Image (tube, rainbow, N blue to C red; front, side, top):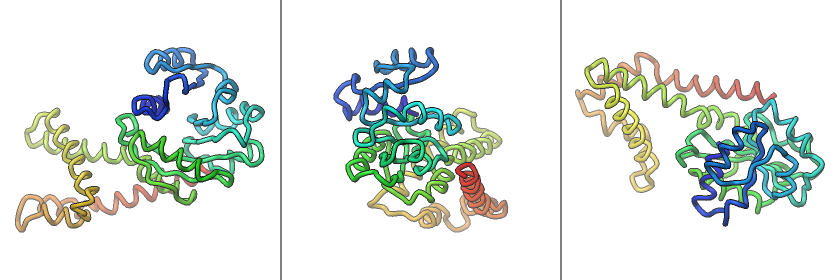
Amino acid sequence: MCQALARSLIERNIVSSKDQIIASDVDENQRKIVTSQLGIVTTASNKQVVNESSLLILAVKPKDVETVLNDIRDPFIPQSHLLVSIAAGIRTTTIEKLLKPKSRVIRVMPNIACLVNASCSVYASGQCATNDDRLLVNTIFSSIGSCEGEIDEHLLNVVTALSGSGPAYFSVMVEALADGAVKAGLSRSLALTLAAKTMMGTAKMLLDKEQQFHPSQLKDAVASPGGTTIYGLEIMEKAAVRAALMETVTAATNRAAQLES
């Protein structure tokens, strides 16, 4: 995810040169790949990154957060550094306790669609983050898709369950629809293409500010009386697909809360 972010910052001229980005990784092979693909400086030292940067993006697994923060605590200067965390399930208060007093922290929830510059992100600010910090985060994460602004941190578990996990849910739906088309005679490649592009087109219509379609309106516009669509919708209702999707988000939200605690 951080590689996608760095690539977008460079390609969209958010940073004036590649030399403005430095990344650390314990894996030497990974560092070589990043340097080769992006042309940025890499290092094995987290402290070096802190000493040479003002904006720090924490993109590690939750289990590694405490180790990394303990490593950078001494060179981290609250007045000079902003730490942006995309580590799932780690609250800003937890990060603040591991850093020096009055440290500026913002927690962001993007998703895997950042790989194609189509992520949708939201963020929650720590106690000492400034308006300038928020504007910077909005600019950076808008470069990999859209940034929908700030929300209360307790709602990030819902965002994790919806947009963070959402690409997996939509992938299952696309695959299932394609399976149905293959069963009816379409080739696998054509079925997957049609299903994915239909989902993409539907999303564009629902997000179009001029059309302003509500999902129920779009559904009714497609489902003509006695036609094929309403027969398909009947099967979805009998299978309780709507309820299953609601329960999916609820279950994932509850799990995110468990991991956070």
